Image 1 (cartoon, rainbow, N blue to C red):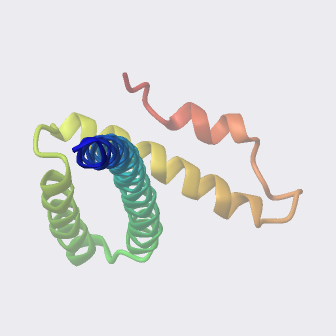
Image 2: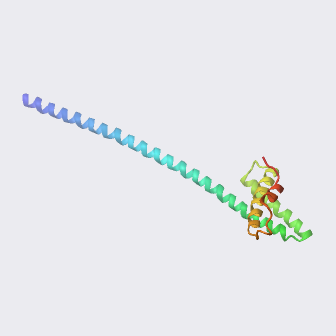
Image 3: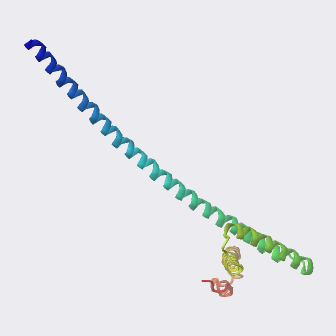
Length: 147
């Protein structure tokens, strides 16, 4: 009888220890899973931010390229047909800009285009020989003040 009681006590102690070990393992695993899911969420947010930043940079470069093309078109425009074509192209560019900036106004569009065009003109002028190159203030004085 005593041996049965000792055997039963030993089994109960072992099962108690086993339950405690399994409960501890479960808690540790849950904490680990929470930490990993937090890390994944942080990485996903960082990737989304980086993608948004990249998209904005890409949009700015595309707009800069369009500004260069606009400048070329304006320079070689034939007086009457060129004015009509320039107006048509400007309207198309404005409509594309509106898709990216749905709350934008024509004034905001004009300001963004004027700023980008001034930067492009400045880049083009920097390629001229120093003797022919106007001062940077000359170009910037033509650009309207935008808020």
